[in-house]
Structure formats: C-alpha cells, structure tokens
Length: 104
Image 1 (spheres, helix red, strand yellow):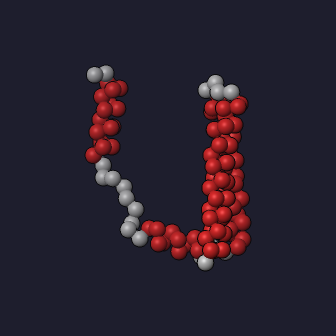
Image 2 (tube, rainbow, N blue to C red):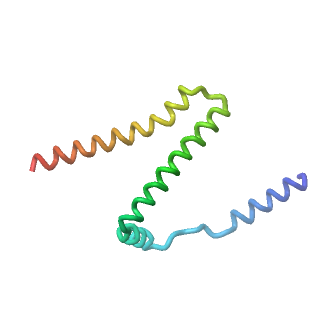
Image 3 (cartoon, rainbow, N blue to C red):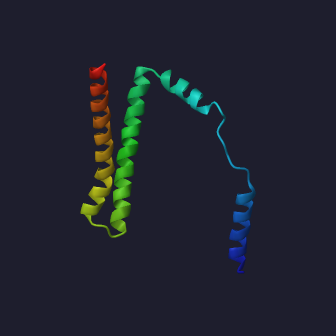
C-alpha cells in the first residue's frame, strides 16, 4: 500500500470507530417550540433567507449540471419537475381538505 493510501485507510478506520452522532430525544419538541415562538419581523427575514438560499442553490445546480454537459432542456426539467410536484401535492392536499370538510 502506498503511503497516501495508508493515511486514507487509517483516517477511514478512525472515522468508522467514532461514535455515531445523535440528537437528544426531545429535539423535535424543542424545535417546534422555538419555531412557534417566532415573531412577525423574524418570519419575514427567515422567508427572505430561505428564498435566497433556494435561488442560490438552483443557480448553483444549473451551473454544475451545465458544466457536466447537460443541455438546458434537461436542466430545466430537473429543476422545475420537483417544483411542479410540490405545487401539485399542495393543490391536491387543499382539494382533499376542502372535500373532506364539505362532506362533514
């Protein structure tokens, strides 16, 4: 084995021997409590941050896919396809809730 391979091998062995990280058992309750405590101005900034993150990730993904030789049609389909599915799922859920409440 080459020295570089031996270093990588020892790094992997140390990493595999480390304990598996885990979240505290009440993590989801604490997270929901923090989220529900938010105020209106913070919600606006969080929304702006989330939209900015989404736009940057879409542009980065498009640039990386284009760099791999994909054409713009395939890139558009891979980016807009999941967005369409999310919108369709939201529409279906609202339709189902409307029909469910109307039947009661």
